[in-house]
Length: 392
Image 1: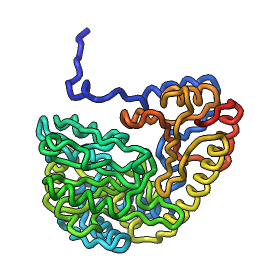
Image 2: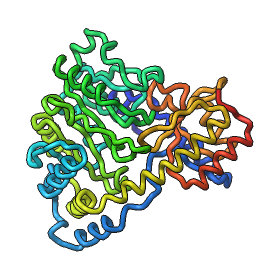
Image 3: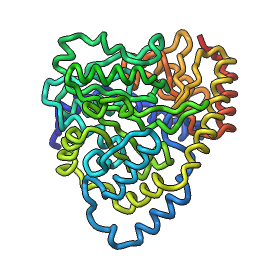
């Protein structure tokens, strides 16, 4: 039988720890264990009915059954631009400063192909969403990790990046509110990042899918609200978390027109755009009632408060995030991220995500997603309490 060697770019990818955790989870399921999964950032709340109804109407229209345009219907891009103006006070030209994406993950993964040559550096937070690094590797680039530490509020120290690295860099990735840490970025930091990108000739790529998942009166800002940001920056957004539409694969990138045109050239060669019926549903989401966003945040905030309170009672030094639906939990002494996740899964039937799966600086933490009901969270807490494990 012939042997097929995978391309070097695949061999360069870091080990996919999440796949191993999924295998261990399936072993527990086969044993009949009642699994409580706090591992995946996938909303358990349904897509609002008015969005589903818009999809059904559009899907029944034969005009939407053919190829869409890769850049997205102008009506969809206008809805995104209008939403940005209403939500962030940012004015965008829907024809040139908005590009539709088949979910923001697709755009993030393709983005380095437009601007990174082999050997170029991309500045990537650590820990971070793995696609920033994977897209860099697929483009032949080198990902330079910028550690996110608790002491700095999980903000990278841009001035600590060596000058010789900055000279070779093309893209600076940021993500606030942050996955996996739940951290938020003050306006001063966003302004510093814009100035850093301008000074060094970098593209600032800001991934902002959690901007509408916020608590305690906090309202995350768009990096494009910083004066002059549009000269150097693009921002990636998604309908996935905002409107509980993860499976629908609809998102958009906004900002600098020339940068978006580069990504657009990649997309026109590699994909055929979002199904138009989904775009019509996206228009309904962006232009319709927005109460669902506040309702979602209220539900996640209750879950956050229950889990944070219980973990603190058990000695875990966990912070209550002001945004996202993630808790970034320090593991107890004597455990690594992976060993603690395996212990909790094997003995309590609870899925947590090892922080080391998001990068080397994620070691010592696990991520919990608030994607189950309050009752299930309370059940998870009781299972952990019965193990006698306490935080450090």
